[in-house]
Length: 134
Image (cartoon, rainbow, N blue to C red; front, top):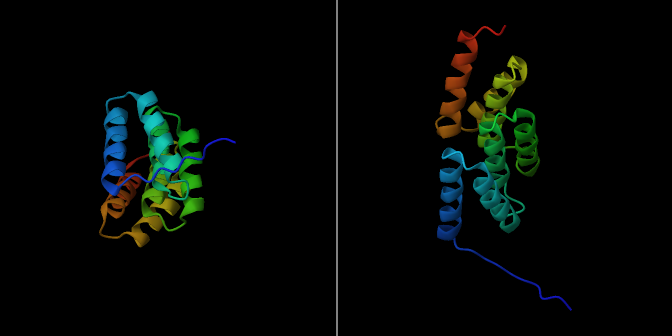
């Protein structure tokens, strides 16, 4: 009979792992970032944050359609995730999908008007109005 493992990392340990993943992603070590975020996803399968962060890795690599899949999975886990809506809106903007971008950015704004996701969404909405797509 195979042994069953139970791992319950502390909030501090999870925060450390997530920060390490972000540092790797921002340092363009996408493979290491993806490995870390996949590990956190295994630890927290019902949380949207690891899925969103996996999407940000794909987004940074220019794989917008792959990023969208992660953001949509995050929204399946938590339809009220302002962070997922903001990220998906940004991805749609980079794909020149103004309508989709505006819809998700509006959702982020309504869910988190004063927080980081709302600030990001507001800034991106302003950018949409100033950008002409060719």
